Length: 345
Length: 98
Ligand code: SF4
Ligand code: SF4
Image 1 (cartoon, each protein chain N blue to C red):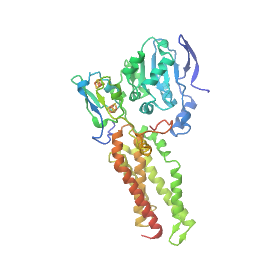
Image 2: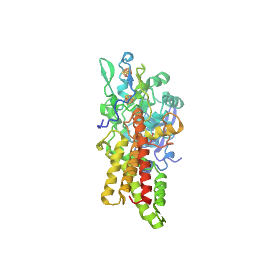
Image 3: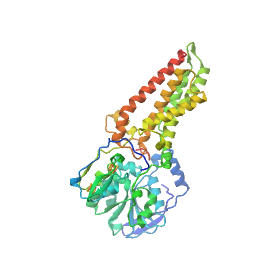
Image 4: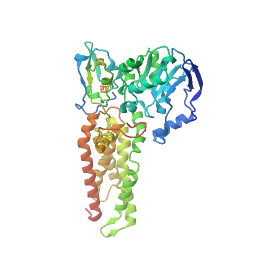
């Protein structure tokens, strides 16, 4: 495979290793954008192995990362102007945090890669710098016992690596902690939007078809007009759950994501109500509040997967009540909406 | 912490101080500043900040920490319910979803 980031090789007593660029080129940037929007993500991998940055020697530092190309790209960019080695382990193309949770960024894989690539012959020292977020899958003391290499946990963000090294491999409190600022939340929105994929085409279509029903029979014109409105309502509810909720997360009341989702869903429904397009009758309006609230709530709850502070126990507790409530709201709303097709209340 | 705290009093994190050697490893690996050190031993300072990632338990060589770790992800839990397994994330090789 042609890889733009490799330029030349470096010869050591342990063999030849590819030397890599630290600057991103156009295809790296393009790739980063595409992965955000989940296009061709599956193939975004780097071959596991040892890579050289700058002009490293036997005393240069060793940085470990997974083989998801974005992780690798962030690391090499952070090492600009330095000499060092990168040990890429096989995480099946998944980023470090998720791979550590799934067990592919693991003690076993680090040990295996150190052995396969004979890291002990490449450097004289016995230290490897592992991203802190990998700690979920790695037991530092076991790596030490099995290979002699001491694991030093680097900062959470690759961009802090320079400061971390300059401070003598010490991370400040801030470098150790995961925050969840607006930019990060917004970056994750595309993933959520695509969660619903086909459903977001099928469900509005079902509404569109059903919209043609009226007491006297079926009307295609009615289907298009009233169905179009339904589609707008549905998309708005979806948007409230997977765009508004993540973006405004800290400012929306309630701790539960599902409750936050109801808030944004109803907020959007209220706007449509004021605009006069939500529905014609009271029952229809109430029905839409129920359905949009449920949809937004469900999508918001899904964002727990992308958030960086929700615990399994917490999400389980939340879902126990939220999921039945969402189903109840959605079914009730749907029934109400169907009824308005036949009785004008 | 950015002011983001999830539900309170649900976390399964437990620290056995009698086993602790005070090595500070748990403080190093925790992404949410849950631990501190008092009298040369670890203490849990902010239990509700814990996201149950399991990094501390994994890296405590004295085995002083236990936590039921897993992905705090609704989609993963639904996956688990549908298949009758533990919560599992199965998003193929996608990058951001766990
Ligand atoms: S890692 Fe374990 S032994 Fe070390 S300070 Fe934390 S609890 Fe104590
Ligand atoms: S499980 Fe993770 S978040 Fe919780 S205390 Fe341990 S390292 Fe910190």
